[in-house]
Length: 289
Image 1 (tube, one colour):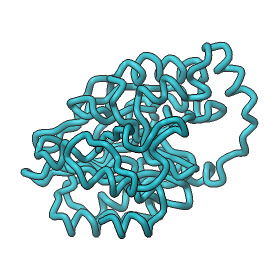
Image 2: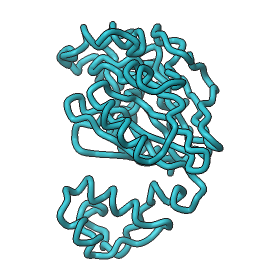
Image 3: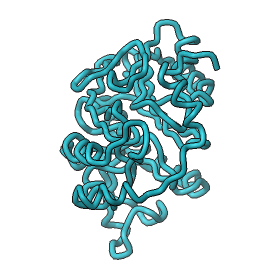
């Protein structure tokens, strides 16, 4: 495993390191850079393997997938006994990849859920429904989009003995939700909370104050060790924690007034696919493509 880790890029190497252990452990010096501050010796750095509970047979199967054009993360979770699975934020262009993986692993995809109505890509939900009999689509009831399941605060998406609990986290859009595992060890935050950032608030019913309140009331109240998995990252980062974002997020550690000012002055370009993606996603991908 060490020879493999040394040949791959740091982000993938980090993932491989996390998947090779079922316990908290110290990082030996040969495992490479990127997990410590300049003042900490390597031998003193502790990492938390996000697949530990899976390997111990307590947590769900978990796989993080990436679509490079829109820098979107898709997440596959499954119960290893019942083989029921949930897919979070599928992308149209990677449906074949996702279906191949699900088939190879012998899972039965029960629900494909979108964390909000995306503006930068078309969801893969429609194609998945066309190709998997009985699969259900899901999105917030406040999104304005159609789906088989319209989600509200406190709703649970069950797969085998596991579930995801819905926390409404509007601000980026009216229909943003964060999906939290039953033991609160993982939170899938969509575009509401990114790694050292957050979703923009200048279109699609965006509201900076609502986003700030959503993060502080619904996400930052989770346990500090809860892992954060966003819908996007543009810098090669794969995960964070609630504790990290509470301390280091350069926007959301400010006062609400400072945050609103920051968001007002971002001056970001319009998403390239917004005129195509939003109309398609309002029917949750159930359209002719």
